Image (cartoon, rainbow, N blue to C red; front, side, top):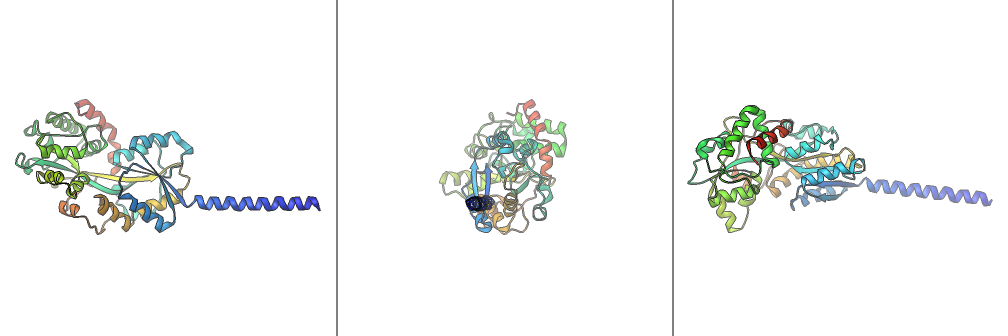
Length: 344
């Protein structure tokens, strides 16, 4: 009798332990571990919307792009990360090249995200255009209608730029290689370097301010930074915008170069189902509006109605349809050429 009682207690204990394990597993399945290099306060609305829609809680770790890539690689198979979000095709392609992403199959993502803005393992969820900024009264808009114009000797001593090693510039250079070939791309880079007003430094906002201040007369910047200044209440920001002109490059040919923000499911993601739901949520109408209205980015899904006065003021434009996979293909070559011509 005593032995039977002991066995019954053991059975009950095992059942209880099993129930606890199931409960813990279910709780674990309601979590998404997100590694994000997007440092935007407006993204909080994205995460809250996802949790409200799915019941899945997001645990987020933020960091700089290269630091997150290194962390995921070092964590290896033990990484808790489910999804990586970052900005720029060059960075996303770097994650792909490191073998960090898992292939994703989703009819919803394939339907909503244009083919040129996705690969087999990462997806673009918003875009920014890389436009030409010029000083009103110093340079004519007709003189800077294309990216090729930036290498024209008439702009000697007039161009400001951020570092040639920055992913934004690497992506632009990769697109020029894809469209025109390596030889012409190298000549273009040499021409741009010859036209520098100063050694490359700072970020995109710094280039815009430098043009407005007369430190140089021409620069290239992402529309995200322009829209942020346009929506600012600070007098100095408004004054800077009033002093510059904006050109959508290559509207008679390829169209303006597009930079992207995107992400993918990580290879060792412990919650792959939740990760896929999150990516699909980012392609929803609600999330796409958040990208535009909250963070000055264009939606990738067609037909999304937005309410952003700065994006509206920038107007419609022809965007380069080059596949993001091509940008990844030529990223390394872009860096080599920039190094060779002294674009640092």
